[in-house]
Every structure is written in C-alpha cells, then in structure tokens.
Length: 131
Image (cartoon, rainbow, N blue to C red):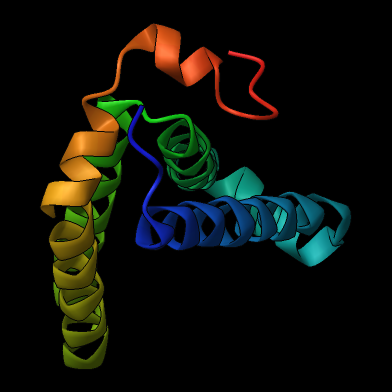
C-alpha cells in the first residue's frame, strides 16, 4: 500500500476545515434577520453557495481515503473559483489562479498519483478508516 503524501493530507484537511467553517458561517446567517432577508430574496444563490462549500468538504474527506475522483473534484472546484475570481476582481483572479496551480501540482505528482491508484481494499485498511 502506498502511504498518503503529506501534501495530500495538508490539502485535504485544509479544505475540510475551511469548507466546514464557510458552510457553518453561511448557515449562521439564517439567524440574522437582515441576512435572512437577503437570503430570502436570492435563495438559489444562497443554496448554490452552500452546495459548493459542501463539495470542498466532500473532496477533502474522500481525498484522505485515497479516492481519485475526489482529487479531480477539488481541481474542478478550484477551477470554478478561478473563473469566479476573474468576474470579481484581478486580485481574486490571481489568488485563485495561484491556489489552482498549487492544487494541480500537488495532486498530480507521482507520489500522489500512486496513492490515488490504491485499491478499495487498501483504503479500508487505513488506520481509523471506516470506508
């Protein structure tokens, strides 16, 4: 079995943490009357944003278990944010582009690819693994 690279562990936990924090922060806006009113005016936008945050958490969790589709979900997620950043401001575009480059670099390195090629049986054998 191939050991999980440290870079994959760090990226995965970063997206689990920040995605979870963003998700909870967005949901606490429902308790604020002014924010709840804005959400009520654009509910589709609010729930789309929450779904995108959930995708960050999902990709982080499943990358920890070595699922290859999760790393590509994270690449797509980051690519979406590059496009979103281009719409908002040059700074956001540059920041998200750099983040995208870092993610693509680390998830496509040979050690990461070897880790993601592991079998389903090997993933179940990871310490603390419930999958």
